[in-house]
Image 1 (tube, rainbow, N blue to C red):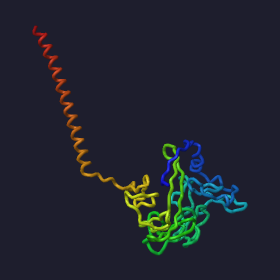
Image 2 (image 1 turned 30 degrees about the vertical axis):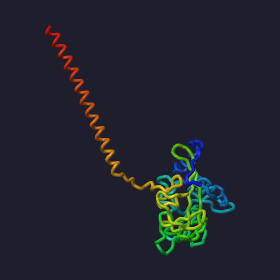
Image 3 (image 1 turned 135 degrees about the horizontal axis):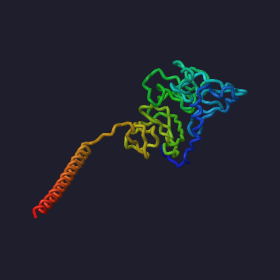
Image 4 (image 1 turned 60 degrees about the vertical axis):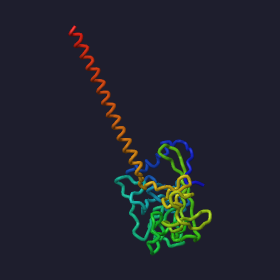
Length: 282
C-alpha cells in the first residue's frame, strides 16, 4: 500500500464551490438561524473528514429532537471559516478548555481514555512532561480512534495506530487520495509498524517506507524515505564548477560571435566604399 495514490476524477464544476462562497459573501446574520435540524445528522465527510451538520458554518444544532440552528458559542481557529470581514465570530476558548467541532460551548480538556473528536488532539489534556511534545501532536497528547492518549510508546513496545484517507482535487482539477497514519509512539523518535503493531525507530533517507510517518523527514516517495520538501538543496562542488564553466563558455561564445559578425559587417562596408571609389576614379 502506498502513501499517495493518484486517480483520475472528473473536472470540478464551478458550481460545487458556490455554497462556500455564498457563506463568505453573507454580510448579515446566518440565514440558517431558526431552521430545524437534528444532532443525529452530525457527521464527518467521508472524503475530506470535515465536520458537517444540518446547520451552516456559523450555527450549530440545539437538540436531537425538535432542534433548531442557533449561533455558535465558540471557535477553535483564529480566523474561522464562514465569517466575512466585518462579522464578529464567537470567542476562542480559554486555556484548559476546547471548542468542539459543533461550536456549541467550551469544554474542559479530556483526560486519557476519554472520548475526543476525529483528529482533535487539542481536545486532550497534555502530559506533565514536555519531552513528548512534537509538531504532529498536542504537547504530547493525541486523539486516536476517538480516545485521548499519550504519544509515549517506546521502541519495541506495542502501539495503536489510525489510518485515514483524504480525497482532494489539485490545481489542475484532478482528484487524488492521501493516506495518513497516526500512532501513539513517541512522535519525534519512533513510528508504529502497521504490520507488527510495534514501535520502531524512524527511518532515514534512502530506507524503505510505507507512509510519511515512517520517515524522520516525514516524506515517503515511491516507498523510499526522501528528503523533506522544506530541506534546502545542497549543491556539490562539481555542480558549481560545471555551472560556472558553462556560463563562461556561453559568454565567450557570444562575444566571439558578435566580434565575427562585426568584422564581417565592417569588411562588407569597406568593400562597398572601395567599389564606389574605383567607379568614381574611372
